[in-house]
Length: 165
Image 1 (cartoon, one colour):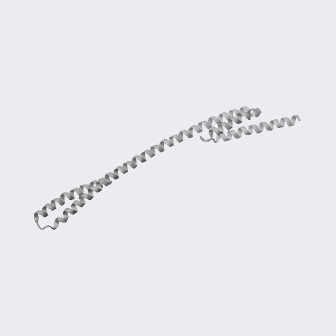
Image 2 (tube, helix red, strand yellow):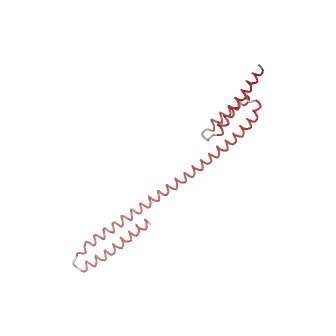
Image 3 (cartoon, helix red, strand yellow):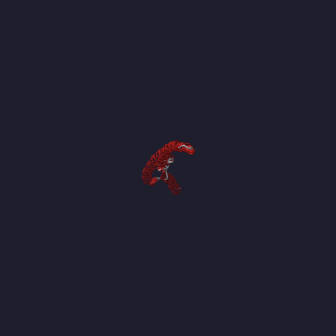
């Protein structure tokens, strides 16, 4: 009877030690999302099972302290890396938005330049339509107007090309 009782005590100590070790193993795989629940499970195992582990109690208590410390450091490191990644992502998004705004501003400016170049080209075309006139005076006047309009068109086109460069 005494031997059965000792065997039962040893078996209970072994089951309790295994329960604590299982909680320690789970805690060693903790993530920021699971750490609170796993910490609670470990605490419960330490409160209920650790006192039943006999001579394994102190080594298990020391292992629990070590695992908790490592898990807490790991969780803090993961949180820090996530925060850093969030900061980097926000900065990348901010730069992308700045680039989108700059591209939109440049396109608006280019559109204005194209409209100006089209107007100058239309004016040049309307002025050259009068080249069929017979008089020399009219022809010279038209040539001067065409030359001015061409210079304006060339300047507007150059501005467009510069904007595209």
